[in-house]
Picture 1: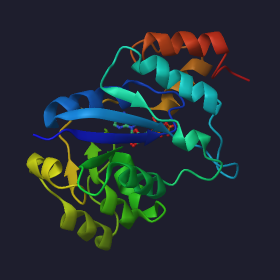
Picture 2: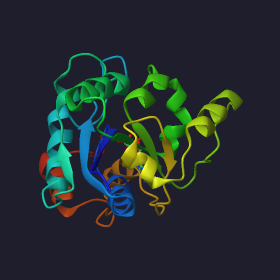
Picture 3: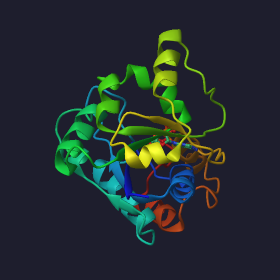
Amino acid sequence: MTSLQAIYGGTFDPVHYGHLKPVEILANQIGLSKVIIIPNNVPPHRPQPEASSEQRKRMVELAIADKPLFVLDERELKRDAPSWTALTLKEMRAEVGPQKPLAFIIGQDSLLNFPTWHQYDTILDNAHLIVTRRPGYPLEMAEEQHQRWLENHLTWDIENLHSLPAGKIYLAETPWFDISATIIRERLERGEPCDDLLPEAVLEYIHQQGLYQAG
Ligand code: ATP
């Protein structure tokens, strides 16, 4: 198999096992050589993350410090403009050239609202889309035209992800992790333990920075 690189975007406010574990399992299942984590820049008119860009970046660094599969890419944090995935993938495609396979990983919840993303239909020009499972969300798109779009690009053959540079959607069979950043922030505000939800180094940093506290 070729070396398939994947890109994983998100707010990561904070990064947690619901992000890391499905992707680590996926990497073993389909043979990912590298996963590039790209934290979003959240534009001023959108609901702001509780942690600053610097803090979200630092939490990702701490979470992946002992995990060679992952690397951090700060390009969206450094951008002043909104974080359009379509734009980021176009840029990354230009960097690697037309032949190299690239994949963009999203959770099942993100697949459902994917058609609302800026220029979503151009994303498959530059990368495959790999969807990890997440409990509580259907795998069917709400609108028929979007379901057709999904089915037109669907593949169950991992080899396609390695041999084609882009254009396929793969619904991965990763286990469910019932974890969200929202739940973690709420638990921390109430002073409840979160040890099994995110890496210890990230939790220590959260406490040290006084993040996600009540009031
Ligand atoms: P929030 O609760 O603040 O909305 P989140 O936990 O959903 O945050 P994001 O940073 O918004 O995390 O998500 C980044 C990516 O990770 C998205 O593609 C999302 O679908 C995926 N993801 C997040 N949590 C899970 C999970 N438990 N299982 C699978 N995918 C997940």
